[in-house]
Length: 252
Image (tube, rainbow, N blue to C red; front, side, top):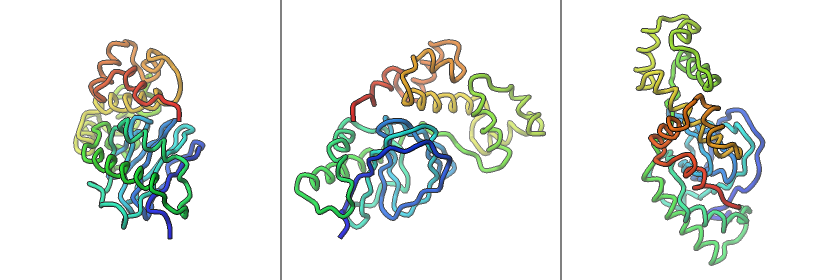
């Protein structure tokens, strides 16, 4: 009989977007590095400060833009409650991270349980299901039309020095008015607000990726003013960039 829960603890190389679906409830967590998750018309970045709980048989797309160390858990649906939602991305708690660290060697799906690991998995289940009821707002609508998806892609590769909105519209062969209307209907925000959010999501990834200074991260995502970058980052995450980085730096 397979275990009620087991851990995926291994290193992964960068990889392009790939469909992902499991027959178990899945806690997706990167102990080091960051991944991107897309589902339900939204995109999230998952650095070590964040995790995702995905219900069994729910399809998502995962991209690995940088090397990462996974510390994820697969839960048997018959042994755990139904997750609060089919997909929930949330800020990881110190308790959940400590439980994951304690369980990181429980990687054999056929290994028999023992009282200690069973108790730790039970505590982790309770904590993760609790966290999943308070999802993070830090996501990016992905759009559904080819026009908006291409507009977002063109913006994403030029965060440091983005094109003007008029230039972006010209590249897409539409008027600025048409593009603005499509952004409002598909994304629910103007292009400028989308650019700001994409910059913050990329900043989150850079903070997890390396030891670049906060100023270097700000410049890399197009902010010449450190104070403006810090203010925008705090508006999205509730923390300064330095506080956010400290929240997930640990030895695993």
